[in-house]
Length: 305
Image 1 (cartoon, rainbow, N blue to C red):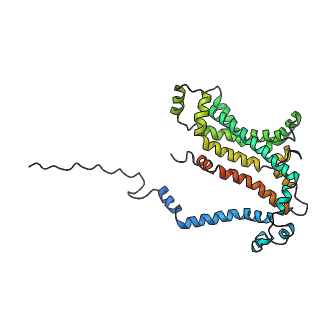
Image 2 (spheres, one colour; image 1 turned 120 degrees about the vertical axis):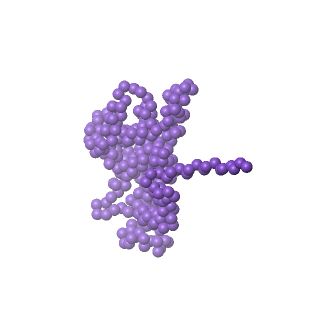
Image 3 (tube, rainbow, N blue to C red; image 1 turned 90 degrees about the vertical axis):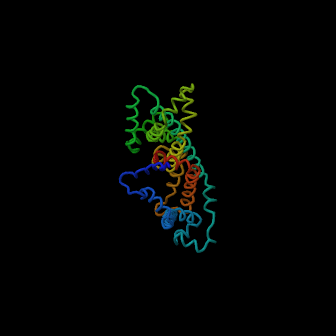
């Protein structure tokens, strides 16, 4: 009689060093904690606290100047019938404010588009093209990140005055593009460098040119980083007042400068500032929520291997 013995079972894989068998990792425990109800309540409270100034600004924009001067905005919640959109009707009927709003669009959109396009081209060149002095040029670009904007205001203002760009929308756009490119190139170059070399080599072996590889391969892969860059650049230019205050004249000033000029000597013109500030706030919020998915993907890119 032959006795058959069962084959030995393979030993289970050893747990990673520094962790007891059967014990979840620190990341897994952190995820479990964050999924708890108490944490969700805490995050909701924090979000409401952060949204309180925005809500106060909106309520203040619906009150007249006497009510804003006599009591806090929260008192209007007890008397919602006193709220009105007359302030918005007045500010939208002000040709100076509406012109400043369109000036902001004419400055922000070209400055964002130019930075994204130029940075994408330069980032691909620094990441995957070989040319003399590539690393040294990239070091110069990185070194420009530490140059404050304030250092270049007066020299660039003199240069723009000589060439006829001072006090124009084009001058404001060029300044934003120049100071936005170093960070944009640094960001996209590092992102494009993470693309597997095998993908690019396979495309080259199939007869793809550099322009075709950049347009049909690199841009789709780098869409999250490009979207994140576009959001950052747009928000920075849209909310800027320092550069526009120096380089823009009365005909090309954006909304931030127009609202700043509404400040009175002994008080704030709340009936103009509040609706104007809320209108200025709405556009960045719309842009952010429209590209929120791409923004999160770009921020989280490279964090999980």
